[in-house]
Amino acid sequence: MPERVMIALIAVLALASCSDGSDPQVALGTLERDRLELPAEANEPIVAINVHEGQAVIKNDALLQLDRTNAAERRAELEANVSVARHRLTELVRGPRTEEVLEARARLEGAQSAYRTAQSEYDRAVELVARKLVSQTEVDQQRAIRDRAEAERRESQAQLQLLLKGTRIEQLDQGREEVREAEAELAQYEISLSRLLVRAPRAGVIEALPFKLGERPPTGAAVVVMLADGAPYARVYVPEPIRTRVKAGGAAQVRVDGVDKPFAGKVRYISAQAAFTPYFALTQKDRSHLSYLAEIILTEAGAGDLPAGIPVEVTFGQSAAEQ
Image 1 (tube, rainbow, N blue to C red):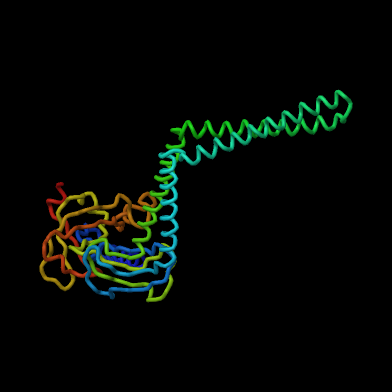
Image 2 (image 1 turned 120 degrees about the vertical axis):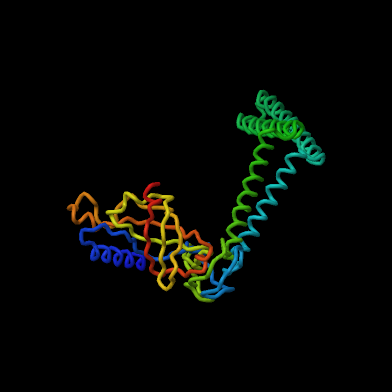
């Protein structure tokens, strides 16, 4: 972030200016809190803003509402898909109805009757052509009619057999899979729909509301910026001469501008990379101007009320160097 880069530059310059050959013992930086940027889940207008900047909120508080109209229509469509898939599976489990079997039997009987009639007409045409009363063309036409009738009879018979055997296990498995897929898609969309109401993921303070009521933020854009509740941490730059004596878990003393008493702290993190310039490109004198980003947790209870952004100075005790 620009503010942090500026602070880092100021810290490094301050360290450089005070380095006259002696080991600097102070790391400079600022107090920070976890910054949470809550995004818009969809490109929909903002219809309600329930908080204001600077307001304290607790976990799950409703902060901002995006329009649900389009999402509700899509949800109704997915619910309909689930209903269709479930009804289809129910039909497969029950198998063919008695009326469907009777209909198939009647269709087969009609096809058999038509085949017998076509066969008789074909036999008669063969007899007449032998007596030279009709042409061969008439026989060919009757043969085609008979063959078509026979194909329809076989098809009707196969359909009846299929109904009598019932639903195959593969069809049942496919029907169940279609239901699971439709339900999973609906459940996933329910999650997206619920996120149109932006809630606080943890207790904190509203730092910024980048968009106004009625505006349509892009999908993924931060619509609420929060600073997390609890004790802040010091984000400082450790001078190179004392880098080897500062380790994660070590003790530290944090002095905050405007507060007389220092706060006890513990090193949470220190970077292995030097800030800004690679160490191998520097002379021994220049290397003393390097700094390493570190985070120090303020462990005292009274630190919870300190505001973020305040400059701090951190010194590392003997206990920190020995760990």
